[in-house]
Image (tube, rainbow, N blue to C red; front, side):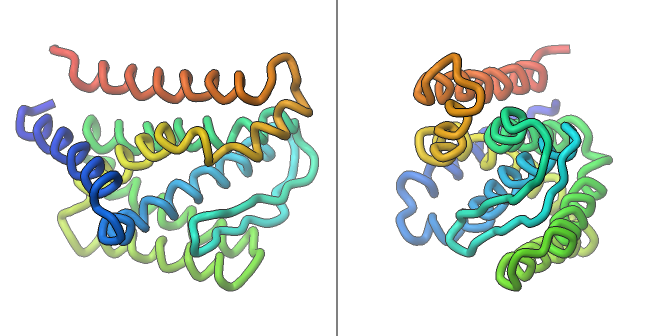
Length: 216
């Protein structure tokens, strides 16, 4: 990775931290798309867990306040529940990695993400609000990819912000999933599973950073 890109990534981390922890209402507004993206990645992780284990996704809801839920039928409950938090961590890291390591793929990745959001809103329709949010977000990503030169910076920032948001929000975001995971899987109480998931998400991000920044 070039030194210039190295500094751009560090600057994005600083900007995210400032907006998140010191930006107040302005920071919340600027990071609002990140909130919606994290919600989508979380719910899509549930949906992907259902599909991969033989289940069927019936509906997906993304609310304007950043909350959401996915309704599925069949599949492995443990994988589906775990897919929300860990799936979103994996997808966020994937966006970040593509942005810094594979510039040629950034435009196509943004378009693919936008199309995926639109299809999710249409195929797993739950409300006009949710589908409208996903369509507007998807079209915005498509326009950024096709009409600007910001695709690399946008995908890097979205990836970084999504991963940091997931790690920082671990004690709140997956609380309902953890409670249900304790019921279905057991072994450990929800509080222990919470830290296991957090360690996995943090370790994945650290490994990603190490691979990205290692000297050739």
